[in-house]
Image (cartoon, rainbow, N blue to C red; front, side):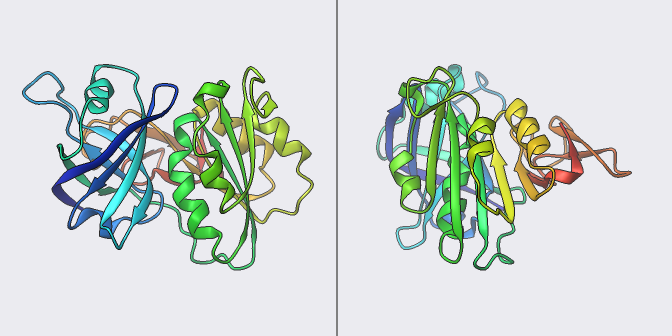
Length: 253
C-alpha cells in the first residue's frame, strides 16, 4: 500500500452520471492486483472528511496508468467529475484482497455485474480470458446507463440486461443466467447487495466469489465501518481489509 499523488490523464462522461477517469503514477498502478481498490481524497479543507473507495477497472503497466469508473451520486463524486487533465488526486492504495485467479486454466467462468459493480469485473475478464472461456452478464437500470459493453465483448461472451428493457434483455441478471445452458466451473459477481444475494442463492451449487461494495471510513480495517456477517466463528469480516472479494459460501448478505 502506498500514498501517492496521481495525475489525471482523462476524465470523461461515458454513460448516465457515469465517468471514466485514467490516472497516472509511478508506484500505485504497478502494484495493483485484479479486484483491488483505491481510496481517494476528495476536495480540499474540511468539506469532505472521508476518502472515497473506488474499484480499479483496468491497469496499463507500460504507461503506468489505471482506469477507474465512478457514478456521480453526491457532492464528493461531483467534485471528482470536475477534475480536468493534469489535475492531481491524493490516492491511497492499492487496498483490499482481490480475485485469486491463478488456479484457473481452460475453465468456463461466469462473471455477473450490476451498475457500478461492473468496473472491477472488466479487469477480471481481461485477465481470465487469457486462458479461459468467459461469459459476462451485466445489468444496468436503463439504456443510458450502459457502459463498457464493447470492451467486455473483446474478452467475454457478453449479455446486457436493463431493468426497464430499454436495451438488451429486460429484467434482472438472474433471468439471463437461467437461460445459459453452459457448464460453468466458477462465478464472480460484483454489484448491489440485492443482486449479489440473488446470484449467491441461484449459483449455490458452484464455487463463487463476491466483490462487496460498502461505504468505508478508513479503508484499512481500523474503523469497523464496513463489515459483513461471516458464516464462521469470526462473526464479521471487514470488507476493506478481508475483502472486498470473499468466497460466496462464507458471507451472509
